[in-house]
Image (tube, rainbow, N blue to C red; front, side, top):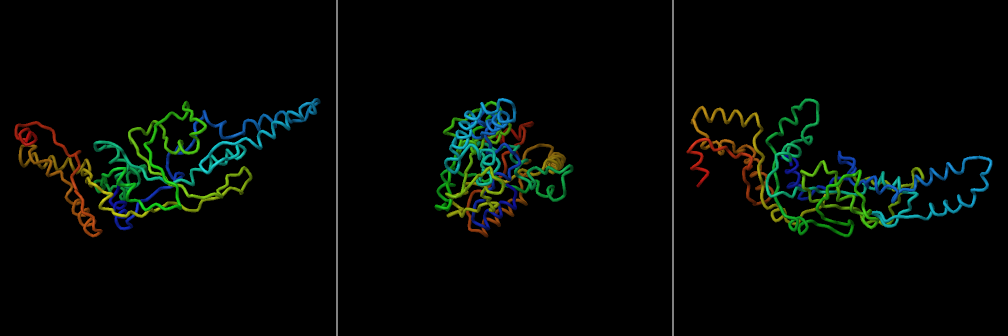
Length: 318
């Protein structure tokens, strides 16, 4: 996360949960093509409309139409907020993601360069045509917070206002995967397109504990969620955070440091220390001290230096 987000984590003493429908990936929380007819009766309604068009023998279809209408009006599926009618299915699919909130973490035994690039700068890697000054200034000014699932669950201040679930994300092909009918209520929210499998995500999800949320095919009748995000209080931030890893310095800065170091010492020995993100470390140490958090702070393992002389070899071997 960027340094500004880390600062908010400490200053608010709370964990930020983003609303699902704010995610840039619009497959988030959605069902697959294979499950559409389990949730929606739009195809039956279309067929019924075609059958009901005026024609010479229209009266012969009245009985069939009445039976189909009865089935459509009563057919249902199990959704996030209990049993839903399939006639409301299309609106359910459009709106249900607005009722969930997530805090997303990476489950890897090592650092990931892609995660530093995507989530370690303002603007999620800066999607602007040319990297703007604001986003450029955040490069090399981010942290990786290391924790455990248990530490998060034990330290979140969760009350009866929300349902809560923590699960490993399953990466799927939305064209071919089919969820079981008993999985439609929650599994879509712990599944993600296979194109994001590098994230290896563990997801913590909240949704309001309400009995009156309505998804209606009638225009304007659905319940609208007005809450853009959720902040859940943390009981002990020092217990939640196990370690803080400092981001590597930006590539162009590292290149200059390397060039200068080689010119001065004619060896890579000591280069790793030169690549240490000292400016960021001072800021992180100050923030932690200010907020009463005492945890280990280490440099990025991305700062590793290649072995190309005996001095570096001996130093690493030790």
